[in-house]
Amino acid sequence: MISFEGKTIALEPGQTVLAGLEAAGVGVETSCRAGVCQSCLMQVVDGAPSKRSQQGLSPGQIAGGLFMPCVCVPEGDLVVARAGDAHQRIEAEVHSLEPLSDSVLRVRLKPLADFAYRPGQFVRLITEDGLVRSYSIASTPDVAPLVELHVRLIPGGRMSGRLKGSTAPGDRVVVSGPSGGCTYDGVEADQPMILAGAGTGLAPLWGVLHDALARGHRGPITLYHGALNEGGLYLRGELEGLAERHANFRYRPCLMDRGEDLLAIVKADPALKGAGLYLCGDAPLVERMRKALFLAGARLADIRADAFAAAA
Amino acid sequence: MTTLYERLGGAPAMETAVDIFYRKVLTDDRISRFFEDVDMERQAAKQKAFLTMVTGGPANYTGQDMRRGHAHLVAQGLDDSHFDAVVELLAGTLAELGASPADIAEVGALANSVRDDVLNREPVKA
Picture 1: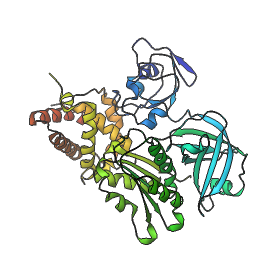
Picture 2: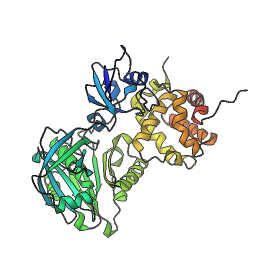
Picture 3: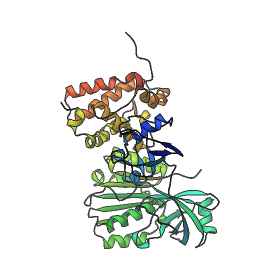
Picture 4: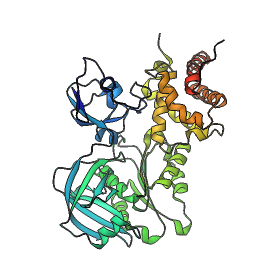
């Protein structure tokens, strides 16, 4: 039995979720119909999709309940939705707000219900009057159960202006998600890791870095943080401290006003071809880096990207 | 009697195949514009499905799926020359993976069997 948008559909024995939906008149975009191309991706809201229907999906996709209905013959009842329609939404209380630099605000939230996530994923922050913005989760294990976000203070930015100007500890917000696959999953303990972020692209990398170290990652980890100038290198002291304490971690700031190009520096990393690669920051830069590093030899399966799109 | 898909190594081999094939198409001026998808992950998944199909792996494309999927590219000018270029790069990819000339010819034939659907046109009756 599957349920979709309030409609209940009984599946015949051996019938796939896709076949059941189509027979009931639901339109689903499809292509290969063989559990590879991911055109038909949908989301499980309740119940467990078959293993085959999640084969080949990234850890982030699986964590988000995505599955391929074209090859899903479920063992039990399922409630399904179009991908992206159903997100966990929980209330949270603002715990603290503190500046990490002139342009970055550390916001810590206390979820008021169980909120499970993998460091490096992102959430949508929703204010009481319906303003929505996405932020990466930067939390490290030591601040649990608080959820930490690094908010870039954008001149004229509606959300960042409000968080800086009027939001106070105790205020309530809604957090939706988590989404995204920029996590320490699918990485071998001895594999090199290259973390490259620009601006607040450091946020998910900060979480992933701590997660990797906490899980005993042995391979070399290099974090490249790109900023316009020294003022943009937030958490620099903490990162230098981590590098001193962990022999396999190297921190390499990259300054635009000194003519340094983040992409060129990452491309020159000798470990590029076999490394787990993490690219985070503004969308145009991340997409440019993803393509260039792929062409330079990084494997698609090793590239995890979190591209920040500006709010309209 | 195994399929080329199985002999190459099945699904994990397709990961390697996509890396090789995708790099070729992105750097080929004849067709790169049709692959300039911002969503590289989505694009890679589609290519993996294509490679799976042409090497004899599991695939259940319908002619309609192929037509709909490529209609917007045909509107951008996709034609036989581009299709030929893709088949050429596909052959190069398979050669790098160790496929024999006989295998490659067979794959070419499979690819050609969807030409009319991809290019959104009626097959020419002799």
